[in-house]
Length: 138
Image (cartoon, rainbow, N blue to C red; front, side):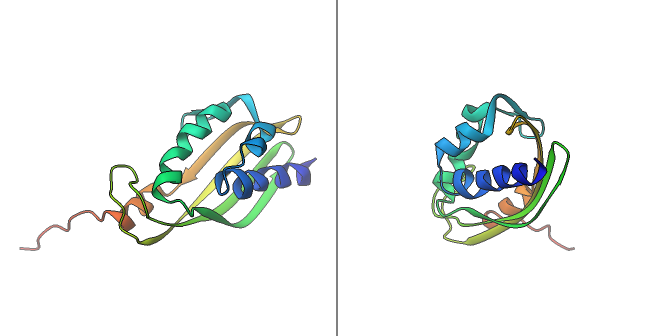
């Protein structure tokens, strides 16, 4: 089942998060799902979480570096890639190509994701589109 869980999880990256295929989301994420680090709950929570990405980075997709499984758990390490073509988290479009790294841990029950812990480098992403002002050296 471990290899099957990897395939299911990678489909979420490729077909839902990058392509917005809600059928894949519904088939892969349990209604009682919770992402402990993002505060996302169930498929509807993911739809809300992804809205800023769909608007701000409409060509957003993942380069999956590797996935590992151990029993009911899958760990995936990835790079998110896109172009800042619309407003994202209050920052108007810059047209900049961006990429940021992350990793996710998913726990499966009966072929669906029931729990996750996600670690996207959103600060790294935001620094690419809205760099913090530099302090003056005196």
